[in-house]
Length: 129
Image (cartoon, rainbow, N blue to C red; front, side, top):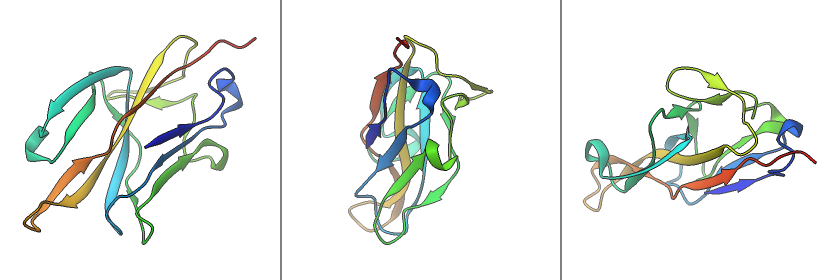
């Protein structure tokens, strides 16, 4: 998973979240939290969830043939002025740390349906100068 954007100028709202190498045509969603965590195989899923506390989620997407999910603020798909949490959206603030991860549908080694998680990415929002 990658995070791309000018962390020092968050009000420009020019950020992209990308997750690659997902199973083609799988469904997934980006997760956001201001808390890091590590829970192995939550709910029987493969992998580990690395976001914790009040976890918010962006809408479900399909990875298509490329196996990629992406959210881009410049396309209006999300905004740093409305980061999701479990209860409400809130704006990014200078000095705040955000953690992002993707949950997606997968198959285990036997081919049975399950779910999995990408690696997580974190960033600290910077001050405007």
